[in-house]
Image 1: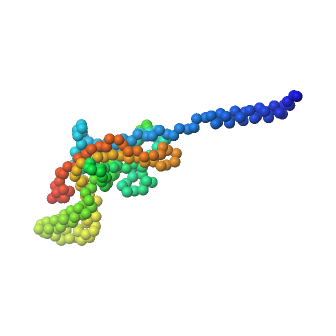
Image 2: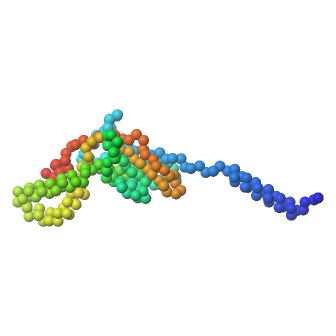
Image 3: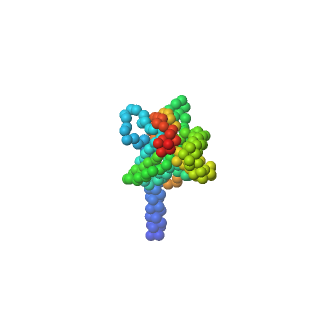
Length: 227
C-alpha cells in the first residue's frame, strides 16, 4: 500500500514536533545565580597587624561593606537602619561585644559614600556605638545647668534664659550633636539579606569580624569647644 503525500506531510510534521519536544525536555535547567561575596572592613589610618583597631570614644567608626557579584544578580546595596523592616534595606552593620554570648549593641549608622564598579558595589558607613539614652540625656541636662550657672556668673544670665526658654528644644539640639561611643572591646561585621524576585536570594554575613577597642578620651561635654 502506498502512502499518499498528505499522510507523508502529517508524519513529517509529527516527527518534527517529537524532535522539538525531546530537545526541549533534554535542555539543562537554568542554574541559580552563584552566591555573592560580602566583605566588611573597618577603615583605619594606622592599622596594627593582629591587634584590635583602637578608636576614641569621641570618633565615629568608619566601615566599608562591599558586595562582589555581577550587578544583574543582586540588588543595589541599601543600608537598613537598625530596627527597620527588611524592605527598608538589604545591608546591616552589626556590632557585638567581645564577651560571653557576644551580645549585639545598638548603633547609629550613616552612609557617607557609595561606589559601583564592575561586579562590585560598596558602601562606606560612619558608625556610632552610642552610650545609653538615659545617660546621654542626664549629661545634657547637667551641661545646661552648668551653662546657666556660668552664664549668670559672667553677667549673661538673661541671654542664656532667652536661648534656653524652650527647654525641650534646647535638649533636642544637643541630642542631635551629641556623639560619644561606648567604651569596650567590640567586633564589627556586615550582613546582607535579599529576598527580591529575579536576583540572588539569601542571607550573608561577612567572615572574620573586625575587632575594635573603643578607649576613653574624654566625656562629650568636656571637650574644648564646650568649655
